[in-house]
Length: 108
Image 1: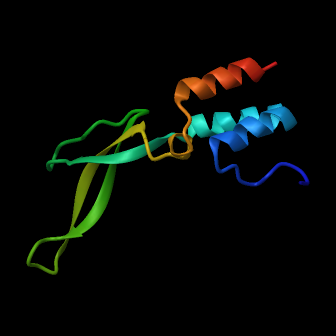
Image 2: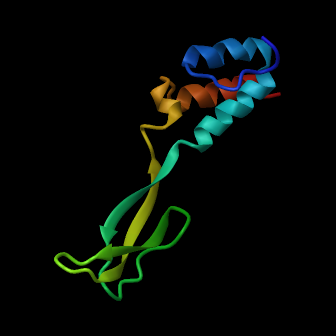
């Protein structure tokens, strides 16, 4: 193997790489933690409803066709930033606590 692998596809890959390059592995584990959130669509906002906009909420405008018509209308949806249990962190078998402990144990 030359250099650090482009892809780590399992929990064991990360654990193995800790012995080879702890600094890079900790950085990649931190990235897994940071990328475990996704924006999820919530309810359609009523006309005149401003919605919530902050670090974990945003409003997105979309164009839709009215049912039975060719006319397009602009609608607004509330989105919320939440932990995504389909993120790579969870899919490869890690928990947030496990990764945080590994990072803490290997940070200088």
